Length: 302
Image (cartoon, rainbow, N blue to C red; front, side):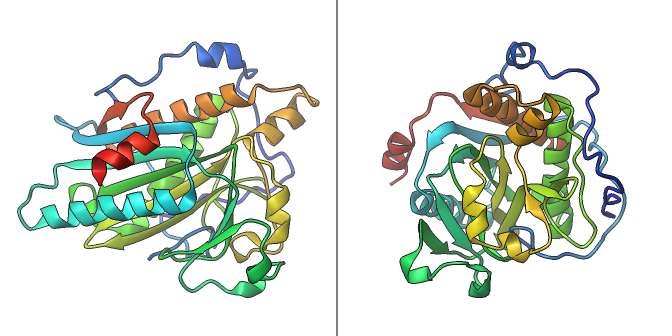
């Protein structure tokens, strides 16, 4: 699909109606059962027109959803968790028993991650004396930052049951974010031709990074909700030097002349909207584990 046109003016978003955290929080949460390619903003080539919702399926594929969106999970542990799920899922392929996808939503303590072939020239510090943990992992793309206030979502999908096209998958993740920002916050986000991720004006609000093995894709997306953007100044995020980084909170405060926001509520609203759009676009039946505890999950899966 083609990238959407890049913004042509400084009016980077509009409001269809005033954003109301109280009204948004009153919406029902998704109920149980209802609902190394490019990465971290690496350069990409244009592909085709705006994504359209896929038609509703007669029977949706199940997706186990681990709701940890208000919990801090160390990056190394989350990465090991993903790898263990991928290993288990690959073991089910040959017997056609891979019947369920996975979605993990969480936050990370401050950490920098680099793709497998990242250029360390994009770091503004000595890697041996870094301000936060640094992890080099098996996704593509350059360096990015994860930290509190950033909603990180790791879908682990078998593309054989969706569309065997990694570029389509990447653009679909971008579309989930664009739709979620519009529906929850009336923020008009878009793609930028030649780049990946999701943008509001010239500010990047979400980065993506994926890797795949036998068409099972993992890693995912990071959406800046209430994130402290200062740590991004220590890197060239995604190797991009001429554009900035933004957050939902920053955009809403600018629109409202500095009105204070409830950070926990903003994260809840962002999560609810993202999960809803994810389930609809990929036509998945989410089997959500509410109030789950990461340490208990890891014990059960070892």
